[in-house]
Length: 403
Ligand code: DOR
Ligand code: ZN
Ligand code: ZN
Ligand code: ZN
Image 1 (cartoon, rainbow, N blue to C red):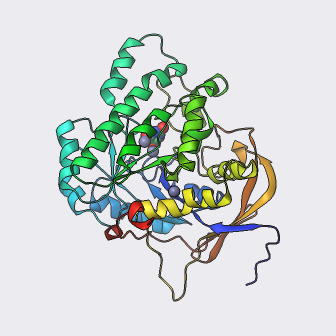
Image 2: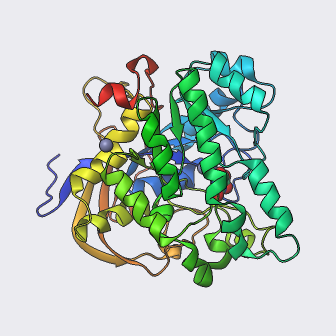
Image 3: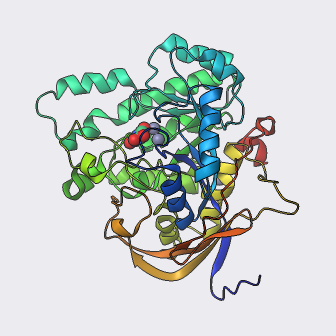
């Protein structure tokens, strides 16, 4: 088939290394079909999903059940992290078919916080898979909650989920990674101060930043209220700028969404009962392309942060050799398209976005997964499912691949 694409830009499919698809168990928020359609529309051809579903992905059996679900429901390629709990060390040691182990060092959706310091250390000491951490110190969070008790509203979310809580947690994780020479990836860094810490540990550590931590800050609580509630919390405009600069300086290696859909009804409750998290797969690539349109970075930077970087961090192999020939995960981009972000026109089930009303330039218009077109101009082809991403951890990760 000949594809005519005059004036368009073709880039590799985006790999979103941090999403929550809510399947199984929380499918009123999202499921693997709706979430993968949102990916396809957003130019994401592979996602890596976190374990805080119901049941949580904490054993090889549950991991493989999720892989089977995805094989039947996802139109893009997929991989699943295995989550650390107080009692699944043996599972973590033998886990396969996974990008790595996810540890929640602080509490968040799904109650998977692992706050026992001895156990945390044991996981670094005894397991081999790369580790991804949600880094927020639970003791510091709890202390601030006590101080603010009674008067809490969503503006306090950023005081409770403070820079200090993130910094303390990242320091702890970095120290363990150094001591046990264990590969560590810091999820969704939210504060400029955090960048200064892991810059000293660049040989063992990689990090990611989300579009919402790059482009939203505490001033947005005014308009967004609990729609801007997520973990880690939003910080300041100075943090936005420091995080973008950290990407440009290669101190943060990848952009990932932390796509964390909750229904409109859930998000319209009262803080602190409201759930934390915002959707992201529909809007991540357009938001980054808008930075290209505004000359803040290049198209090559975006490909580096959203395609090449995540493949290197998580040792993703050329995948899906289910047929003879090559696999093309590709996105066609129209850099002349300017459009306003609008929740109801998104594919995620929750159909709201913290970026509502933002006009951005640069949109994906066609997406191919394994050589097959799955999305074109608002229409989907769901006749063939995505494939399981393959991970070869003997590759050694980002720093091994970047030489
Ligand atoms: O805001 C968040 N939402 N942060 C997390 O760590 C989890 C996520 C979710 O699953 O809702
Ligand atoms: Zn997290
Ligand atoms: Zn880089
Ligand atoms: Zn997350």
